[in-house]
Image (cartoon, rainbow, N blue to C red; front, side, top):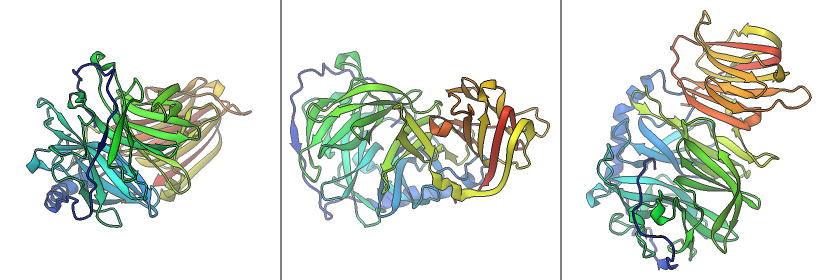
Length: 496
């Protein structure tokens, strides 16, 4: 969910813990609106030809068939498939009418767009299905949860009313069709916002789930004010195996905002939440007895303000794979925004996050040009606006090295990625990086995809995702080095 508001309720202190049992849903009671999904699908199809004709639309980043997308939601891995859900407006190229789109992939490279999974029950007064997450109950059954919202028109002049959190369960083994555990998410959400006797001024949203010491927790995003003790992160604990009864445990932290995530790394947890300009991460410990997170260190997850909210899955190899929203694609026609490339998230020896593009992306490599022992400058033979570039600059302490991408034929226009002793500058965005090893090298891994560029420095110790709009005819690549460089360039194939 990507909007701002303020809470004006009374103080948070002294709230009594409360347990609420919710009526369990069965397949017979799950609510599915096939007509709403059909209408949404038809609206998307009407824009698809416009979107596919736009020369700025990425060809190997995940995008819906058409229309607006934002936050990744409820991503999970099951049966050999990576499932990604996301905020989707099927009725336009701007924010509004929030549904959940759905895609799946075997390898995080080629994707299949699936029918809309989550829809607002407009006849009941629900206008939006805001962000949320996926969770498995004790029997291994998957659930989706979202925040039900009334109001919040496209111009945000209509006040938003946050009704509560709503559970969905799959109606088929392939997770294509989903049913809500309530037929009235406005008046009967699965988890009402005032269930613990505190109304939160209706502004509590973006449920996410994590398991610690055999216990299941639901963490929510909230925008706080001084009256409620600042930016609080409400946390609940499941009291039954089907996740239909929850106890309010207080606030997990004193810093919160949109789309929280809790990612496990052994005895440590990485808490990620998005607050302008980009996702922030905090590494620390979580105590299930107090339901409190203690921060040890933190920072920004990406160097760009255009890299937004995240979701993640843990696959069958134990890899944490992060999906993120890139915004804004201001010149898009028939579509708007896309996902960043899936990133494998690990911790470095220094406790800092390392994000590397999934290695499976190498499947998309086509025509190749490579140069070794480059000193000085060279315009490479391979041109394009859908390229992968790997470059290693030795003796980076000398500075005056790097790449010029989307270069005009005469060299008068370029987007420059400059390597310096203090880091890498991606046409205005500075990433701190140190030369590594005996050869004092800095590596740069670049993905160009029409209007999107992603850069990974030193194996993903620093990253940046940017939106760009150079002239369409500027397709050249130049490498330059004050030391010695090795450069490889591949043309990338479409995933569609």
